[in-house]
Length: 312
Image (spheres, helix red, strand yellow):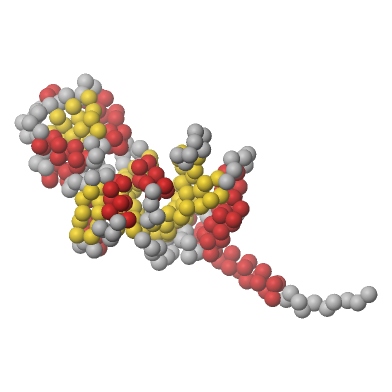
């Protein structure tokens, strides 16, 4: 098994990969960008690909959402949540007052914006493909005025010194990664389903009608985000994460009704998540109630044609 991931070596994505025993045992394939990771899987050069999709401070990684929604038919296989700690990394011999330019990924800059403004107010920022790419560029440069915002793994890998650690602006910083590939994993009892909804008509109450399909079935929506459809100004689609698996009749019934009545739906996957939440207990209770109600309706339907027809 060969697993692609957002590289180069030393990225947070590689750290997330290494937390999974089966993925860590596979052949790693670092790739330059998120679309490239997904393309490698599409073209059969890797078995699956691991990419970041959301950060607890900066929100969604839009390039991942857009690539999955508009350019790929791959499905999410699992998600991995990784605690994020950022460091200001420099070449040995560089001092804080020497730093004039800081390199990193835009998401990382957003996670330590306040720290940089307070401690390096005069330094400019320069975007890199990843935090590890920033660390690699600093290590290879002969300029003593460069620094990188990166993770400790990248600093160690490229021989940089961590001048400051834990520079993220908020505690509890986490990034969610998803493994993409083909097929739908078996339900585990604690799963998440991701979809994209494209409204057939933009009319008053259309979003409410979409949401009611889930509310009526006590399905918990854990994420709702609008993104441009790329078709015209003011045209949006909705990314949704919901509690449950397509194998669950409640979820299947909601998506069936949604596709039939309200919107065009792109399925992005049903996959396991970590930890058991109250939402799972509520979904199981709702599922039991649905099955009992379905059995009642089927019982009524079974009696069709058994009535006595009166004569006039």
